[in-house]
Length: 354
View (cartoon, rainbow, N blue to C red):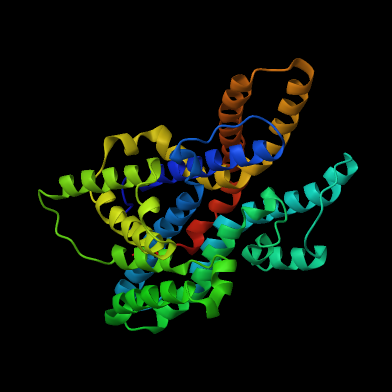
């Protein structure tokens, strides 16, 4: 199967946006100086939504091609590949989070109040409903798991449907699904979709976009540049969010992400094909999953240093924005090389070759 250009490196930048979104939140809650005046520092949510679009773009395209070539979808192999990629790190972070908030912090004398029943929380985490638990604010390490739950819930639903629907109707189904779901998501009678952040429309619309056929021509370079500029404006300014309602902004984001991915993946961009950036993209799942864990010790150290030495606010802010991403990347690197790869190497046994 053809590997799409540019897209792996893009994962790293999206993960980095999530990290710098959470740093000021974490430090502000602990009374440490923070800086988040620029719109770029407040785009972590949008980065996660674009992760959803990117995932739908890749995986729905993969499922469609498998059905088009083989006439079927091997659901068993598909879900085993998902398990090997997602489960090891997900469950590791879930266990760390549960131990940290329920054992480590109390042992250290910190009073962390849980807003949920522990056994119910464990059940929600281990049955892949962290988005439901997240509504109870179980602590940052556990709260970030919500997006992983949404992704897996979507594929549990969509893969069998793509198997059952005839090939010629899949594109129409994805578009209708998107329109209906984004409408239901904003209806009061279906407010649980919003409460548990079940934003399936990002996946389905981007999946629809991935199935559109475009003949490469001289305008693709221009469209690539235009789509990149629009996305840059989206993530570095509040131009769009300040002029739209929540519903309009959600629709606009869904459309922008989907069409951006079409043009962004048509032709290699040398910057995004840099080997180091591609590697950072490969470990972006770990960057996303570990950053809230890394924040904990870094926060404790800075609190102690500020209390003892009265460090300048600017030094604290710069230190936090340098230390957390760098340490997180290092942790993600070792996790990928010595933990995740053990499971990823098994995926080839369940990969469809066509």
